[in-house]
Image (cartoon, one colour):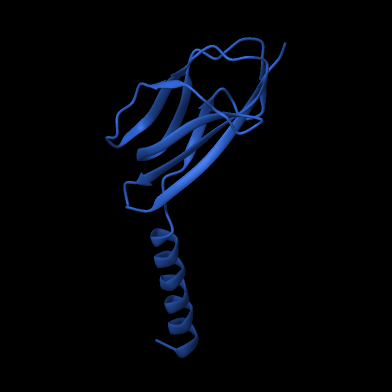
Length: 118
């Protein structure tokens, strides 16, 4: 094998290894959809992941940073979906903040928001 081909194969192997090592669970969707405007309190806060995720913290906060009560419907076991039911909300902007552990052990976090119109 010539040197140029050897270097190309080695570079390809390194790239493939880095891609495989960098793969983590990702959030595929939310309900409500990020940035949406609603006319009533959502029945459920819902997240879907492409690989099982253990949600270790989730909270719903208003624009002032005050935490709104929610009843968690999903336990701490790894799951492809998470859901919680919020109590009735007043009009305003809300953010769902979450943290979890992906099946590969990496800590993950994220957020999404929605607005409740008057």
